[in-house]
Amino acid sequence: MKTAVYWGCVIPNAQFAYESSVREVLPRLGVEIVDLDGVSCCGLPVMSVNMNAFLYLATRNLAIAEKTGLKDLLVLCSGCHLSFTEAMHYLRQDEKLRERIDSLLRDEGLEYKGSIRLWYITDLLYNVVKKDAVQKSIKKPLKGLRLASHYGCHIIRPSSIGRIDDPENPRKLDELIQWLGARSEVYPEKLDCCGALLLWSHHDAAFTFAGLKLKAIQELGLDGLVVTCPACHMMFDERQKAVASTIGSKLELPVLYYTQLLGIAMGIEEEKLGLHLNRSPVDKLLEKIG
Amino acid sequence: MTIIDLMTTNEPDSKLRLKVLEKIGEHKPYNCFQCIRCTSGCPSMKMLELKPHEIVNLVKLGFVEDVVNSGIIWTCAMCLKCKERCPQEVAPVDLILALRNLAVEMEAKVPEGHLKNVSMILETGFILTPREAITRKLEKFSRDKLGLPKLPKPSEKFKTTFLKALETF
Image 1 (cartoon, chains in turn cyan, green):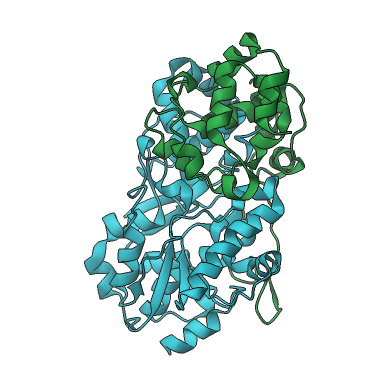
Image 2 (cartoon, one colour):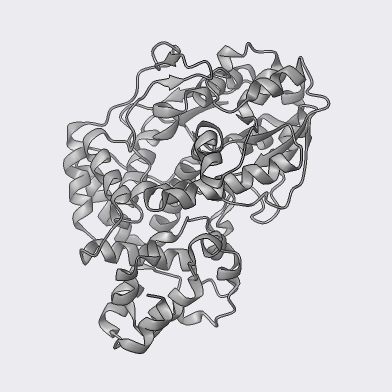
């Protein structure tokens, strides 16, 4: 499969480990990714300020992706994926809105057709690459690991516009973890939000969201938390120490991207997967895997 | 000031109510029968006392300006559980976003972080600028050093079009 890839704001500017690990694992599974030129923010960060500007930004990036002639677009951030899905939904429903956005796009000589198909890392691996190919790529099964999964609110809700998994009982990421030989445990806080979008208005509350979830997982004695959204990962991994001091707890939970976990199972060197860049104590987890 | 107090002190404003309703398309607060499923699952209710069902009710009653100015609309984390779970397809989160848009339009107080997103996108196309990653051993790594490709840059024309898009509400 050959697909265009959209990285968003957070990954290419601040979450290099995700980008590195995606670039390492996907080609080994027969997925060729094509970077896009001239893209910008997906629009979600300005939804609260101006819906029109959000829809313009989202559609603009979709139009740039369509210009490549590719039929598929891999969107690696759950917020960006929501933004694009919503824009496609609203423009399909509302002719007037579509005309308004089209005229903005013409300024740059762009045209939106609404023809591209969106993928997220989870459904791409689950539905396109599939279990057999993933398991064939494994050199080091992750036996004995007990992990927690975190989906990201925006990739499972709202189901009315089409998301990648069940909104109340998502299973795909858990199965992807199990394909590698590890266990994915059910825990009561599984659907809890990371709080990232509250950073723009209520910093401490945002950190408390993340902290309470991390604390709950840690208290279950699990080996780590597996994430696919860069904004969630930033909250749980990069900011884990700050989050811990906000809630007044000691947090030492390894947090990593699914693509990093997959890469470990594939036997790829740790640095190539950006594992030296995780700020949470992933060494504990790596030692256990051996 | 809690939202309940606002109802006892102010007059409803049907024009502003219409303005909000025009922004939210298919999801109508009129369908809400106050079952409170939205609020019972709202993570911001636990932390910041956001009660989505009250916001829906206040818009229904026409107390729009009070909600726009109350600051409570900025406590939503956009987890979308309320939109998913509403049996009447009201989508309180969409209403909250519409109220936030209205707050910007009416020049009410808007949290700095949201406005900064706009200025960052105008400046660079993104809400963040590339920074060096710091490892657990406190070494610094840039994209270059990690062998990652150069970042995309939107054209100059993009800025003027984005500004144009911001003029319409």
